[in-house]
Image (cartoon, rainbow, N blue to C red):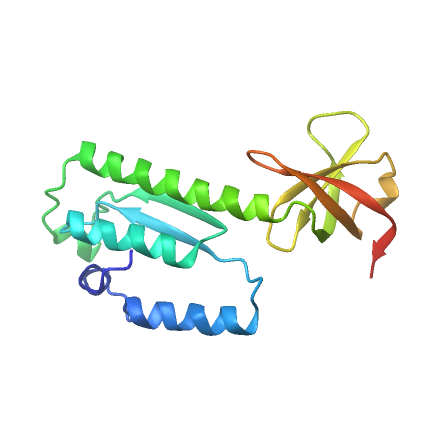
Length: 180
């Protein structure tokens, strides 16, 4: 969450401006920095305005990946003592909107990688397609590429990203591109 009132209720010791300042400083030093986070919707007392602030943060930051879930009371936690008056349907709707927006941004980031050279760690055989290996980019995108050379597994190599798919990228091995 990013609303300062909600963060305080969660016993977090930062606010939105502090979080954004840290992210801006990091991105200034490392422009290609991949940002991942976890979002919670429906924390007790969350208003529509609070939720909109979180959606605004998503637009401002542009997270590469996120995990998100609906708040649920846990016995023995301080939050369990708070009134939870947001209907489950509202929490679910907010979660859906948040996830859709994050998926759209992640897809935009993946599309922006098409045509670029990426250093990947080859993890193994691709799940689908014969004669393909898969690996992960430095921003944790899965890339499938044509090769049957099992000796590449565990190595860093260079690929050119040729296509952005829903959950992965497709790439082409760059000749002689084993990276140290």
